[in-house]
Image: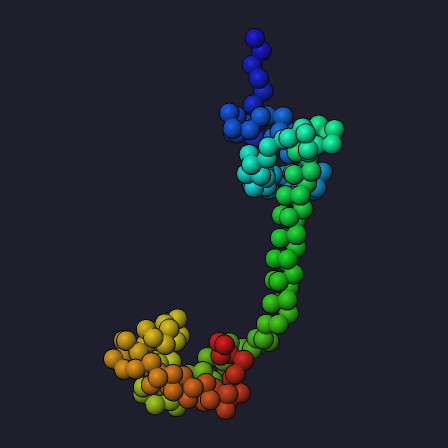
Length: 171
């Protein structure tokens, strides 16, 4: 008995028939996915293959492989559309990004001078925001109400905007 040739894609034995894996790989290849992504794409599609139940009475004479091909094609198109949306979103965000200062040292000096001109409480709030703390976390750490921190944030924002550094503020 000849040994069956095992491929890197035979890890679905017992779960998905090999002919379905082969059909899916053929469709992945036809859609033009790069070879190094085949395993990941196959893994996404296998979930749909496992959910698919062929019903000959509703198939209008089509074979199971034809119906499965439609399921695989739909999933591959969905993956491609998702990637296109992601690329478009990245392109839009890159285009909307503020122009960076040529010299980051100049920016650091500007920011430091603004922070130094703030009241001590506002400096503490600014440091908390720079660490990524929420207004609530800052209020808890300082032992004050969120409204006091909120007023300090408004004052810090106004000071940055006054000096033309509003592009460097987070929303």
